[in-house]
Image (spheres, helix red, strand yellow):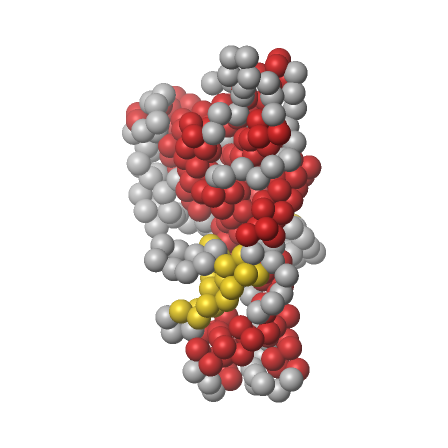
Length: 353
């Protein structure tokens, strides 16, 4: 059961409770299900009971109990607990969890860079505008890409004549306007110009440095962005991607290909891959590409930990096995998610590094 499946299950439980007159509250358009945070219980958590408690004029824990009764026993859900003021916590059935992990790896490998893209915003036009400032221009471009991952259409404009060097950062000139019915993208400005930044850091490091901090924070744009080591998050993310592609090349040389045939014990990596669609949706909703950058760091760390703990390639006289094929499939899925996230940020995903 994927987070999207679980979200639909909880929403169906809300509908049932309302239809049965056990709950008198407006049914939300969607229900958010997230990975359980540190200190929580189970695999996923949902706060919909707290959202419904006020309109229903009931304690949140009582609303949670109504919903728990309507999801207990659903295939794929092993246990449902109520914690805190009324959070629903879900523990997935172990066997179904393995099936879900296998299905997710297969989905990523099939969809490629389209993994995580939805049509929720299909037909909706978003208008964005930004001042004549390099960080605002770069962030607006990535916000537009994020909105397109949700199916939306986007028009981006600048309030003044664009800087011609923005094109080296992948920012097209766009329209010159500041429309009344458009959203302004205005992060804390960078302390330098596009030209100076490009001359010193080049486009890849500049793009990461401008987008990694949250919009309300200053963007550190020091030379550490060029360091070729694990202390530099940009290098770490791009290295993890390149390493995943190197595994595929070496496997082909050894005569085997990927195939998720047996479950791989890599909970942190599986969780990070499962979170990718939700991260794209959240980043689009909050106009925050920094969320994608931080998620890529999580995926990269989880992949490299998995890579160190679970050898993907046979060693010595060892023959390729189902375990090797499954690990390779998981590694390729991680590389795909890293490439997709970097694409949103306008940064290349090198096959060699």
